[in-house]
Image (cartoon, rainbow, N blue to C red; front, side, top):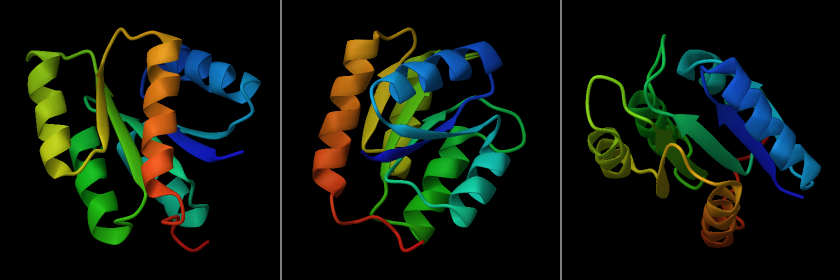
Length: 130
C-alpha cells in the first residue's frame, strides 16, 4: 500500500486523518509543520504528500514549491480552510506552485480518498529514491 506524509498543524485534525488513512491500509507519517515535513520526507520519502497551507515555520505553498524543485515526481495534495483570506486563494496559489490536487476544508473522507487515488494513479513510478 502507498505511503503518505501528512503535514498539518492542527493536531486533532492530523491525527483523525492519519487514523482514517491507516485504517484503509496506508502507511502514514505525520508532521506538525512544513519545516518538519520537509525534513521527514528527506529522511524517508513517501509516495504522496498531503499538506495544509496555513502553518507555522514553513507554509504549505513553500512546501509545495520545495518538493516540486527537489522531487518533481511526488504526488502532492494541498488543503486549506483559509485564515485571513478565502481558502480558494491559498489553494489557487498551491496549484500554481505545483500541487496536483487541492481540497477546501472541510472535506469528506470519500473526497480525500478519491483525490489520493487520482494523484497516485498519475504519479506511479515517480517516487523519489529512498
